[in-house]
Image 1: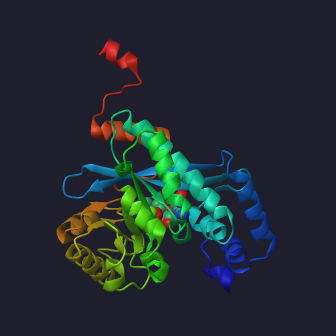
Image 2 (image 1 turned 90 degrees about the vertical axis):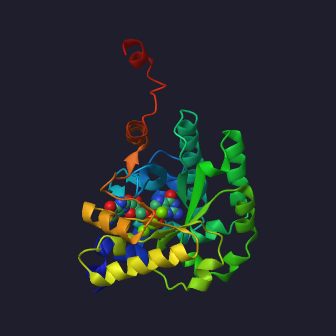
Image 3 (image 1 turned 90 degrees about the horizontal axis):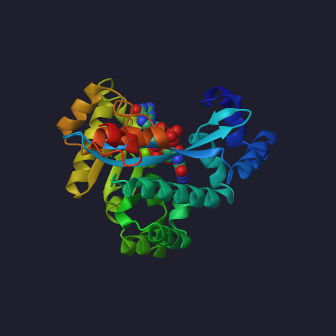
Length: 291
Ligand code: C2E
Ligand code: MG
Ligand code: MG
Ligand code: MG
């Protein structure tokens, strides 16, 4: 019964429902080995202003290249990691790698924020602001070179509203975004109590604009709500021109999705950004001499 429900069938069922299954334990053991090695890498997906097409930022998305199983989605291994001490290590690894990439871009003239996804528990970790502050200063980056994305589920934890870590992040000047909005059951009051600047509308609604009147109404009301609070709305999962057009009409500020670009490895993302931003190819002197 459950096996049929899971997105990848039996494997997902065993991994998520049975905490002590051999499959789950072996995946966790593999993940433990992968952290710190080269199996975990970040891909980067651009975020664009819907009105002008300007590139506003890039989101870092984790990929696990398992030696036997091939690529494993973060939707599968992040929930697993979240139930173990591994999540903290993964967040540290992702933060370090994303900051290094941000530094490479900023020092080459590509000055756009790199968004890092953090789990709710890691956002409340008092070590996170310190880790970011140290990284930013070591790499000579301003705080606006990064943004943190945390899922809407954070609003369910009352701790979040008073957490020292959240206050420290605001003081540090690192912007916060609320991710996957619409999938939880947050009230307006709760949204207002967290210092977020941006709300990302979950792709499950955005994708079906045009096909489902209900989903379109949901997205429209989120966009209105977000605007009335003085925040910015970002649509995830923009796959078609039609969806982008309707989002623009609704007044949604920014979009991310396959229509614009898929998540790309660092090298590809750099080439994409250079093309879009028209940044000179500093590290290719050959072009300068022949041009
Ligand atoms: P998210 O942060 O909401 O990321 C958006 C997801 O939508 C990504 O899935 C992205 O690849 C996918 N996506 C992008 N464009 C489109 C599109 O046009 N259509 C559709 N259908 N999907 C699109 P991905 O990369 O599989 O990541 C899944 C989730 O895993 C993320 O959702 C995020 O919550 C989590 N995640 C990813 N990387 C990290 C990480 O480094 N740390 C933590 N804590 N969570 C992560
Ligand atoms: Mg995200
Ligand atoms: Mg999201
Ligand atoms: Mg999402």
